[in-house]
Amino acid sequence: GYRLKISVYLQAPALSSQDFHPYHLHSPTAEEFEPWYTAQQKVNPYCTDQLLKEIVPRQMEFIKIFNPFWLMKDGKPIGWGYCQFHGSFCHIFELELLEEFRGKGLGRGFMRLIRAEAGRRGARYVLAQTTQKIKDFYIKSGFTLVSENTILLKK
Image (cartoon, helix red, strand yellow):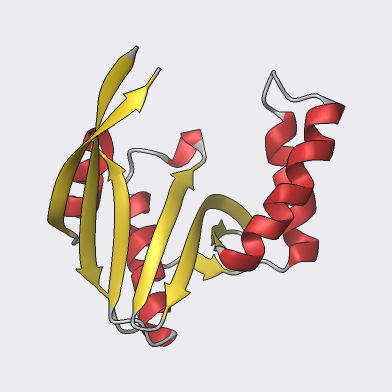
């Protein structure tokens, strides 16, 4: 009943202002976020009205701690991420693009914008915890490997 998972920790310096036309970073308000998040969940085949009643309030509490950011193009979010700021550190928890925008280098641009936002907010470093599978994306985005830890998970 156990399996091993490798947890990868990376860091990158925060950046000064970055430009990534025609894309820009937007930090949505709770009023913007809730309908967007609800619509995102409704596309999942497993999503029911009961599930929405449970997860939407939790997600609204989550964004009070982990700031959401959207990568915007033509006034619409095409990607999203969540960050938590701790003095000179910014911890990024998720970074995702809509399927049709993947594989075009937009993720690295999105990451540069988040690193610049971290710098604007006074952070010196951006930290990430991820998996072996996604480690190379972070390295291509300017991060350096801090450590890899093997974690034993009960099935």
